[in-house]
Length: 262
Image (tube, rainbow, N blue to C red; front, side):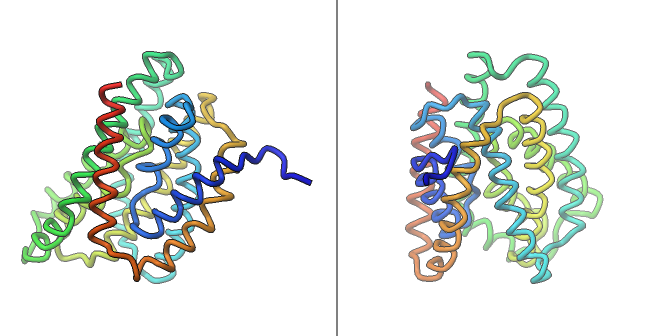
């Protein structure tokens, strides 16, 4: 007997995105939300809301792994959350007030999503150079400045993620590399993933209250993405990392331009 409310096309998309996430480490929002909007003609608000809970589930798994490995700097995570949670809450209130399911709201989300994808593509292309630059620095900025800039980064991510579900991955890691040059990259990645859990849960819950969650779609996506992440993670050490990163950046650029000019 067929499983109820499972769309195999969504599951196949989840498998594809999960595979790429495991292979490249790029956040699923950069890939899944554009696929839902452009290929499946899902309303941008519904695509964002559903993808946020999808991301929360996958990020929670990643946080558990990094937590067991001890590769999370909880101070950095809390600093990010101190900026992102209030900013995300305000963004959700404004979305509710001005209506995100309207055509104007959908257009705004699409444009911001496109811009976020272009920034993500730039961050992917220049991450090796930024990593090398950060490694060459003997010390970061002053403690007060680092705290303020980390909270500001969190606030920007809170707005971006609540509007588009994009930003908590590539953009967050790139900025943290510059702010915390003495912190190992694995701890930066782990801290960023841990921060994404409360942010995506908050934003996803907000979209749920606003009625922009498709639960059947969410179940279908998770059914495909979880095995996809496992397969991609297993093969990640054998993949040509630079080629994959540049191809992914080119794809995100094309999709971002398409969303901005639509």
